[in-house]
Amino acid sequence: MSSSSPTQATARYVVPAETEVETPGRSSAYELGELAGQAVLLVLRVQEVIEQESLHVSIWGSADGQNWGDKALFWYREVFYRGATPAALDLRQRPEIKFLQARWEVNRWGRGCPCPYFKFCVEIQELSNA
Image 1 (cartoon, helix red, strand yellow):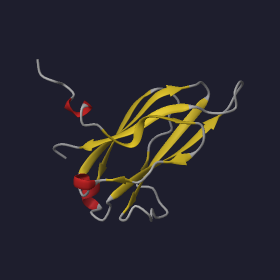
Image 2 (image 1 turned 45 degrees about the vertical axis):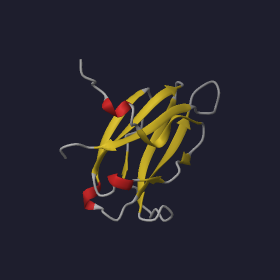
Image 3 (image 1 turned 180 degrees about the vertical axis):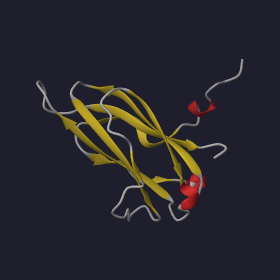
Image 4 (image 1 turned 90 degrees about the vertical axis):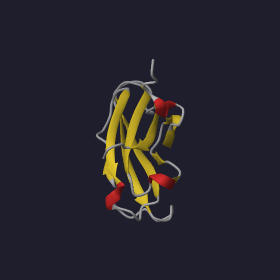
């Protein structure tokens, strides 16, 4: 029987696994290393969520890990539930990008606790045969 998920042992994260957030924020700069100038797959994985809230994640690029410009590389669709949302990012068109950063916005409405709560991560891997 062959292993169907070889990336499990070598998972890499722009936002670390099991990250818990209640407020808007951003990840540390993630150095791409050998993934710079490649097509990559970024998977937003929401592991925990409470009702009546949303998470909106964007991915930013930088040449030096300090200056991120004024426009995200892309935005995930806004999410309201647990699950995985994959996105392909072709960095072959942007060879100057050596770092990625995720930023997120959270929103909560309705009754109950006014604080949103999410547990999520953004996994990164090389996109084969791109």
